Length: 302
Image (cartoon, rainbow, N blue to C red; front, top):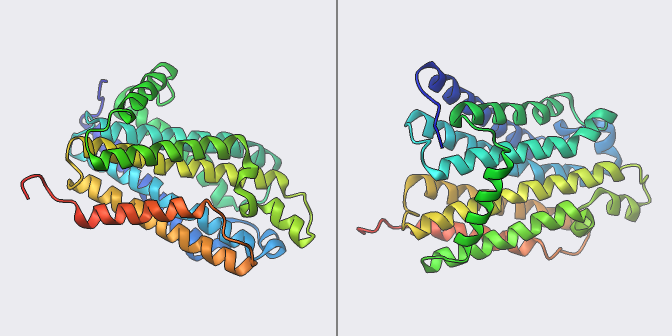
């Protein structure tokens, strides 16, 4: 792949990814600490505290988006875009954001409940991620032939782990890929984590069903960051590189997102007096697994 960054273009791309990282991190923090900023107060009041919990769940995943952007920004600065790791991060960042926009477009068009600034983020981040990818790699992020080729390469790699840690990362990748497909194809899989089920249980209006599906598909797309991260870490484990700074930071990010996300889920189940869904346990496992690797990663010489 031809890497196009050089001179002023390199500076522009670096700054662009840096700003994208800042924006997405700010979105994450606002959603975690001030979930009401993600939507009109009328909607929040109608199904409170449920909407706030769901918004906090989705907000935690924006930490992934910000981290991927910062990693690519660092790669641009150090002229390391030739690395497959950073290309995967940049491409997945663009593809996930574009898919998110595609799923959210009917809501945006219908003027569904969404704060103005969040609507701007929904539109702006995929456009920025796609344009920055084109500038950085002189290629379209959604090139179907390249995506199919990468998918086949990924499948072969998952079937050929080179170490114990790589085996477990391969399993995590496969499991969360299945979750992503399941959530996108059948949003009802989210069970009590949906607005429609909550509305039905509380006797509220079911007019939120359209937003309900979008929220669950949002979760599905965000879960893909677990799969993408696990595959990147599997590749690092194959090369005995888990102790490198990028991969340690990625493990820390995965652990942080997974454990915070799990905490919000438990709080949600407690606040709404619902039983704990099975889907929380894989998230906890991933968080603990990445925490262990973060604290125990050692360089080969050690």
